[in-house]
Amino acid sequence: MTRTAVVICPGRGTYNKPELGYLHRHHAQRMSMFHKFDAIRAEAGQDPVTALDGAARYSVGKYSRGDVASPLIYAASLADAQVLADDIEVVAVTGNSMGWYIALAAAGALSDENGFRVVNTMGTLMQDHLIGGQLVYPFTDDSWTNDPDRKAALLTDVLRIDAMDGHDLALSIDLGGMLVLAGNEAGLAAFEASQPSVQDRFPMRLSNHAAFHTQLQAPVAAEGRARLGAELFGQPHHPLIDGRGNIWWPGASDANALWDYTLGHQVTEPYDFTRAVQTAAREFAPDLFIVTGPGATLGGVVAQSLVLAEWRGMADKAAFLAQQEDAPILVAMCREDQRSLATG
Image 1 (cartoon, rainbow, N blue to C red):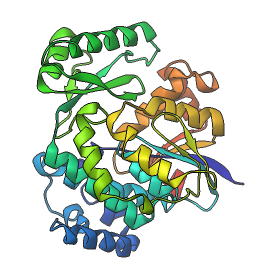
Image 2: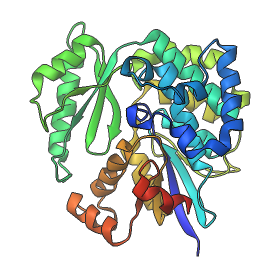
Image 3: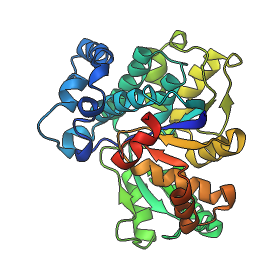
Image 4: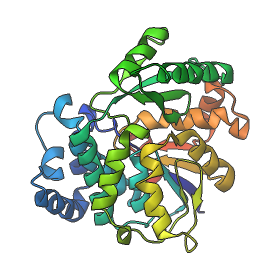
């Protein structure tokens, strides 16, 4: 019996110390693909992804860099998407932030190697420029109960701060029950000063993250467009859901428009991952949401996004956990207790 699935690719921040060695542990049989990625890295004088993944020691300073984290996450996530069980039918693909680039390859709109070129180029450009930064702050409580008034109040505060002289602050990613905000140091510091500390860790700065998905990234978008041509892009083999909730259909997508979105709007405007997940649920009603590795953090965000939409009647965390216990709908491939549900 066939199981339908939406594949969801993660973004930055998902290759951490526990993930060191992910490629070698899970994908030793795909080393030929990884060595092709190594060759692309060698052209730019960069460390091979196989060597980075096979290193004896992990350091945040090195592995959180865009030119290191991005290619590792791409390799791990794409390989995961390519080893799904034979009884799984992929009905759509989406991703969070940098995960959009991986989704393009997982859906067939970019070849494996061209997808790597896009990820490696954009990750390197982001690191080289490192314009601004990001922080994360929740608008729901531990129960994940929707609180639209709280969300609206936080976004109003963002607008207030952004209007201040010398302050840049904007919504970067709508991320389930959390907001990822991006801006310059003055803008980020002002928000941290204006909001209380919650859940013992928020507001939380993201190390080595630039002000993704804001106008501050316009120089990066321009340089990316100059380096990466539209000829790299083609028709997706699976429906693709972008960071606006729009669907790019196989056989009916404009490759030039896909290039323009990927290296334009997607870089400089807010990324609505919540809407992407909710579109996937409502339009494709899959049996499973499969989050590819390497990290586990995106699983909770996917669950929150479904809860916020009250999908299948789930209105809080307890309802989701009850559904997951009864018949799992969310599979995180990096989790050993769930991986076999996707790979067979």
